Image (cartoon, rainbow over all chains, first blue to last red; front, side, top):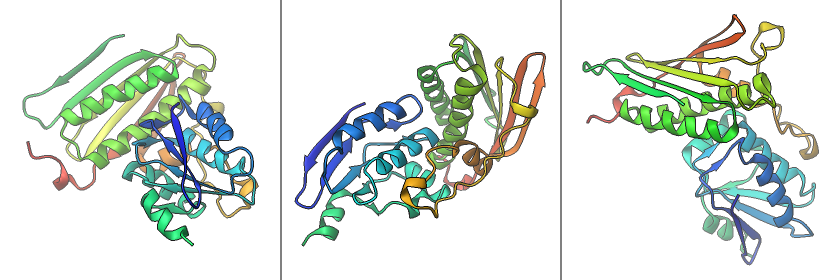
Length: 112
Length: 160
């Protein structure tokens, strides 16, 4: 499960370098997210631009990743492809996350 | 495992059949083959994505619940295209669904404090939302699940 991180000026970007977050990798994704968002990073943006497919397991793992950051830290999403956006919309989980078109838009929104 | 697909020259009906053994990677591969077959059926991207999502949820459920730790159980996916729908029949030899009924798949509740948000139970909701004519039968130690994916926006399908 390949995830990459970099620091933007306003938040940490975690990029999912995989085409699918599904039942085959959901637990690994959740564990990797715990490693990469641990500590006190206050704001993370999860870049899903490369992700073409998220199933119910993948959705649950993304929700779990947000929950394991606790209630005072932010996890935003960016770059949802149409199939992924539809899963969030049908389950109404698009109301739970702040969703950006892309990381650049997130940077613009949160710039000082 | 065996895979066979046949298409009639009229183009009005195309079918796909794939049998494989239970497992998460095997489900991924089965969905890849399904995607290829749906592309040959000239479906729109959205219709193909809908089919893959629903079939994937059903298959993952079979792997996790019907077969559980049994990694040798066979699963068969049959798909037939009618003009405005894909008709699926998915068969497995695992445990019967509880109460011989499909889970209801209630809509997830999202108006909750973060720490109470659900992390599961979305799968059957997605299936019920996107599939029609969902029917389950138990026959001689086999589960048979049938459903249709109604094809939307047929005019968007590729003309070639």
